[in-house]
Image 1: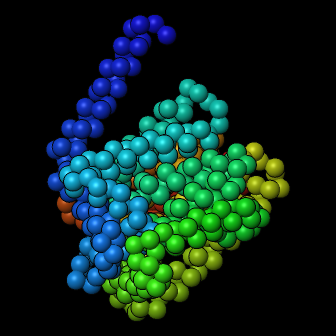
Image 2: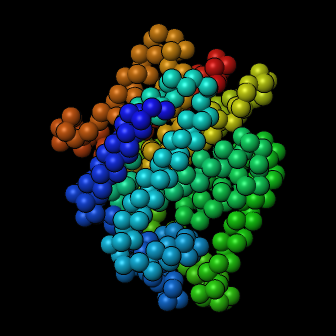
Image 3: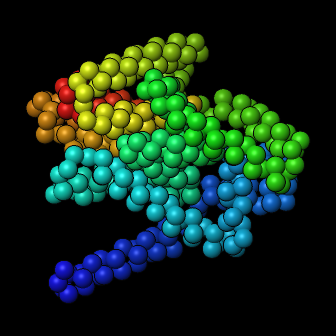
Length: 383
């Protein structure tokens, strides 16, 4: 590499770091409220105090006791320094996820970086909100991206450990359990079980054995009590919330019926995609199947917040990678859909239209179409 090239890379690195720090100082540091909840959970478990308190209201800690052990490490730093560290780690998790997903794409070196950057821009509003809140989804995606990498490399136990570790924070990755069973990847399940077993035991070092059992019971009770009241919240963008808002007039039983039918329909489509991948002996069919399952996380989670569609990162990258292989009409529709996903900002739509789009969870329709695009690629033997 020529000296000039080295200087350019150094300048780009300095610019990237400077920009990240400026964004933190002027736009992120004032919030990170969700990380504040995690930090508080870390403080409480270090003191063997109750994690789950109704008095905390909306900012109640809802993650597993094992996750509080993880966040306890941050409490050895003052809160402001811990926030900065978590911000840097979130950027690291995002970079790792993009790089791993880029590696799974076909070997087209001239386009991989462009696809990764374009996917980042399309999902920037979701990623930005995630980082602004200091949420844990980028950590989960990083762990699952690592699990996918090891799965493709045939290192199933390591894949299982990372998959199981992601469940400490949110139970989203349980969507992969039926998939691993159908694929007969028993070693992954054993690795996940080992991680979960360790995660269950860790809080006992603070609470003792009986206290550890009690705190896990409190966690389960907290989840069951707090979830129903948040279904129709403005920025809940799950499929269930979309249906609940759509049919709030006719009666409460319609959303339950429709979500059941949707689950059966999408599950049937996914099974067909798996069978198609096996029959055609496609190279690494797990990539598209993982992208499909990632996208089911925000769609079917009862609390699929608007920013949770950052889980569509791999799916969007696959669609971008294969966009030229769509039929003309579908190609144009896919391009428009991606533009809508990335461009539905308050600054572009205006306050009223943005409020309508977000409040009615219309983003669900955009990502159902992304699922359709993934299905098209598989059935046309393109991925």
